[in-house]
Length: 215
Image 1 (cartoon, rainbow, N blue to C red):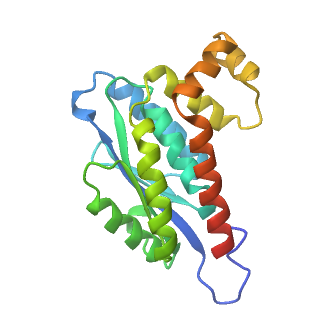
Image 2: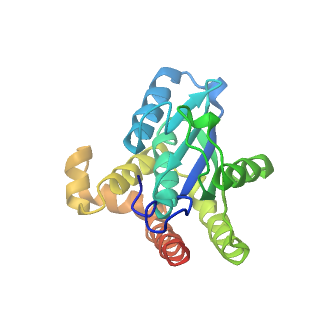
Image 3: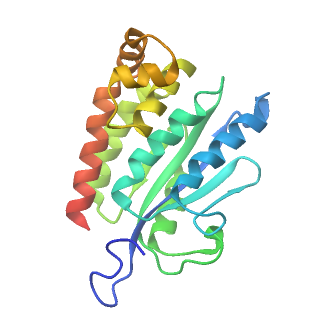
């Protein structure tokens, strides 16, 4: 149970649902490696198949029980997958009520699933977008994301590796990240700068604070 599920008697829990697929998965020679990395990352946020599932080989769905965490989770997924050459991940985040949490996430339903599915189906070239119950917020956050993707979609494997480590260890210094990855600290700073990490982190903070205010 999330920390908001029992706040008001009879009120449905509010969650985020991430629907996604791996771009260029059929061309990858590292299918076992990226699939293992994807599952390991998703397993941090619950149990399969109740909270997340990988299906059709390269598609997945995940419930994030704290909706304010969803954008950070999606950034982490981007970083994990883009560590593999030529791969990317396309995702839609839907925020809303969870009406039925089935034994398999693909059989669960509610507003969050509808928002995620509809937004995912509307994606064209854009690789990340959000749909919530609040249209004014959606307009702003999706503009910020569109701008952020100009940098995110061009992350190199090495930049993605440093971003992934920085997101996984948010309290760590660049010196700590350098030690973790066995690279010089100057490389960490350089790769985070090239990845636009400071601006992306500001966007994540904006999303988090806005969602918390609305729930």
